[in-house]
Image (cartoon, rainbow, N blue to C red):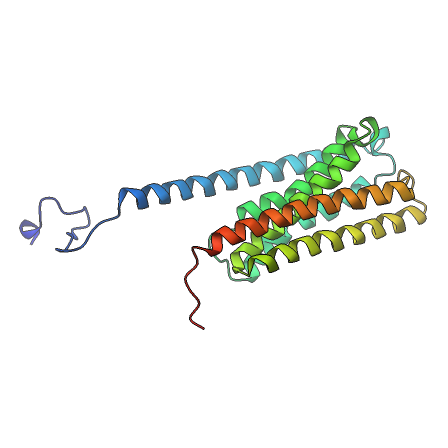
Length: 231
């Protein structure tokens, strides 16, 4: 009967048994901080995707502007939009493991935002050093995105760092090969030179190494709190 309940019982009628303890203030605060961080990452992720789509639509609607000449913005719009579906699709195929990788998804959108913004705001052609900085930042964000996913696997820290750096290096070599193939196909707007290619490779490698070492450091600190292996 309700009259038997302790007057200080929780609303569901389940009173604490003797010797048990409720959540500590620290645990409650940690959960609140985690929820706030996830919510912020989700909002930033949505904002980044919305901004990217808006800039792509602007570029596609104004391909006659000189800043977009020879940049194949229609192709970029299709490819970049499909790329934004990679992490959500992978998350679904892997069983929707919680929490959703909002940080990795946000970081993965970063390189595409940098590239499209550089074209929309005419930075590639008006700022001499923007291309080098863009390559470094782009691959730093790309490698950080991969690293954020690899951290969920709890691999050995040095392996995580090596995979990140290797991915960054290989992916940019493939990118440069793709740009070269596009240039020799007759597309205007790409004025690649040997010095430009080497400079881009150096910039992207620098960004990849910095991001890989950072992820390795995070993995090292995180591994100290992992439970000991039973094998």
